[in-house]
Image (cartoon, rainbow, N blue to C red):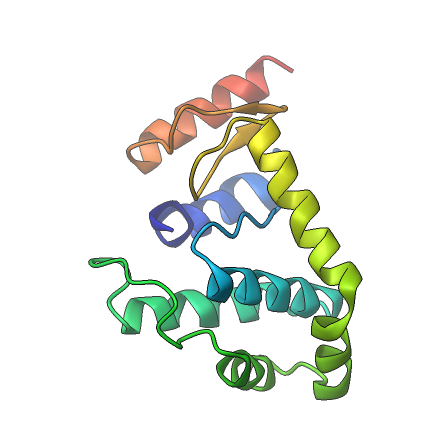
Length: 156
């Protein structure tokens, strides 16, 4: 989570928008049923081209609930009703959203992402994979992350 909140702007502006890096977000819901429900809802938001606004709402809610300082899981912050509220706030079509979260293929997509993460050896989130290789952990700071990215780009 820290990586996403701290490095996202730098990663997007300096690497993605300049065409140096292709950013792919994959879901690895490891914190139980609410984590899985939030990830499935995010898949549905992506289907409506609203992934990032929805993603930001989820992370803001976690921050409001103190998740960054004291991890507590499955306390209702990502209940079906709460997620539907975030979907509405992000501007999703409610009927399409509900249809998507009820569709078994959404869970299959989530399970495929988790399977891929495990095969790469990821054990937590956020995980960073560059050219099919998982980093041993998130870089400690933006400068370290830049060095890792720049080295990978230089080796292409």
